[in-house]
Image 1 (tube, rainbow, N blue to C red):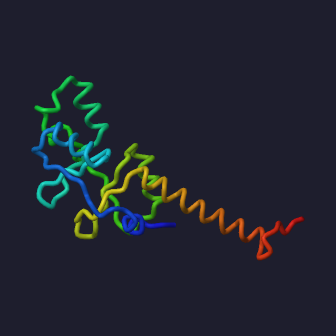
Image 2 (image 1 turned 90 degrees about the vertical axis):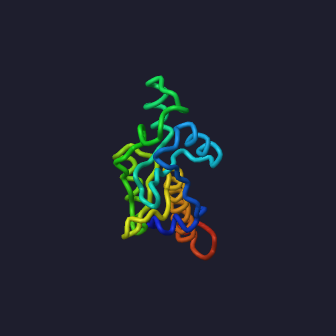
Length: 151
């Protein structure tokens, strides 16, 4: 099974982040500009939270708050669930499913952020693995002759 490290190698290396003192409006502008559903909240090079569309919907819109007057630190998720580059995509999918989350920061052994994976990235990787397995099984069943062996 593919690892997080392998998945990150196929993605753009950019990691989009926002400072905790940025306004929610500024964070939303960056998310729209970069077409992402979440931003890491970084205090210098230290991961202090994650801000997602879900945080905005539940903690700003539904509470009738102003995105221009609310700071990211006020509504971010501060208990960030992270994965390591060595973990498998299957482990990430299980974690995302169990915790109902859509984005996982990837941190190395020194707790430095080296990427972010989304549920979309995970699903694409699983589909790719399944397509490869199907192709191998198809070749095995057909054999070298390209015809069904059971007929």
